[in-house]
Length: 161
Image (cartoon, rainbow, N blue to C red):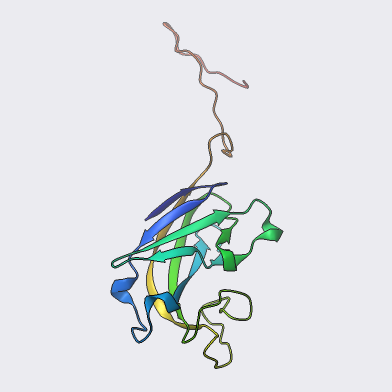
């Protein structure tokens, strides 16, 4: 499970190499497309996180972008709201030539098919999936409570502030 907080960058360490699909190219020719699905409203976000592929895992860095209209999925930016549980699916994308993670060179979704070309990415399939818990940043909670001192005697019900 990935754990993150709203309004912040986060990293995930996911096992991708043990499920690698295209072993005919070097790991430098592999990138991962991450599909994030909100459990509450079903909204979907795609992102190519900044990544470092190690021997047994991949370190993925997701960058928070505060303005939804400015989110660039090809550079690892996300604007995940609301807080709560999200599902994630990680797809392997491979290139024969040098990978270019830009619009028109990398598939934007797992079903996006680009023309056949050594310099265009091809989605090979899903390599891992799981859950992401996105906690609310402190001070931004939708429901906030005020704590009162405990009384010595009878219980009291507080209303308002």
